[in-house]
Length: 172
Image (cartoon, rainbow, N blue to C red; front, side, top):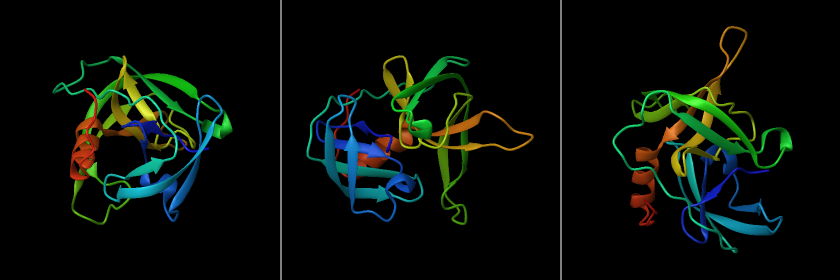
């Protein structure tokens, strides 16, 4: 199941690595309706993709202030292990400008939001919320025997730049 959210009434946003290699995707919406879409744009460095679908939904609102208050609670929505529409909570830890996780060989930094919200396989491409606004797109995490719960979402400013690049108007 693909984690996505509406940025316009018929355009959804997700991670590029979720739809990589596909021109068309199938989406199961919260109301159990299925929709089909065509990948219309992507950004490999930011790991973002836009998909135009044959259904309509309510567009999200984006957080647009300069910074998040330290330690606020964030909520990640996704479909880990095929458990649809799972919500996990964590705190905002820091902003990180680091080389692209998906194309690290390039000398381009991407701005991320670091959180300890559980971001698992199936959360990629889903929204990271602060209150009722999007602050990031869940993308990747660090894990292993020594590190636990270090998750990263593409920062809302990076998402907004991507949307503007393709003439997509977003809600504030």
